[in-house]
Image 1 (cartoon, helix red, strand yellow):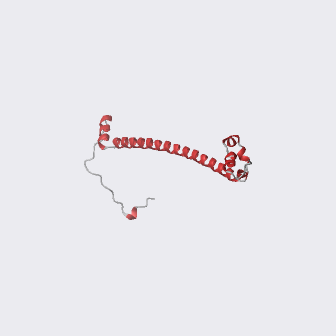
Image 2 (spheres, rainbow, N blue to C red; image 1 turned 90 degrees about the horizontal axis):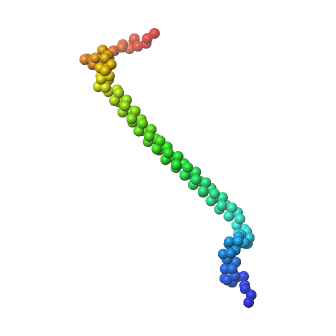
Image 3 (cartoon, rainbow, N blue to C red; image 1 turned 60 degrees about the vertical axis):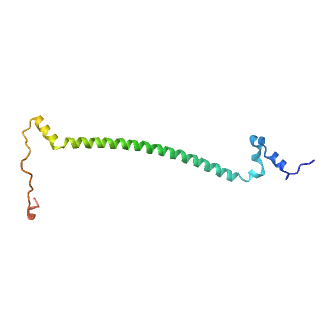
Length: 123
């Protein structure tokens, strides 16, 4: 019995496991005309992999910068609280007493000087 080409068993033999393993299916008529499509598919897969790699690097950099920003914020908060403590009136009075300076707190509130408009320009 001669096998016909359109018979289903002939098609199964044509696409057998061993033909896929040894690569002889790549020389067939079906794939010979699809080389451009296969090249495009491989190129797009490489672009996708490269894009994923770059994205992972950027996300790692963003995480690192977020941690660094948090540390800088804590440092700024620490410096701000230190400066607030150092500039309080009670702390300044303590420093004046410790150093023995002859400075007292003013009994009268400060007042502003009024300058007449025609005398503003000093020359």
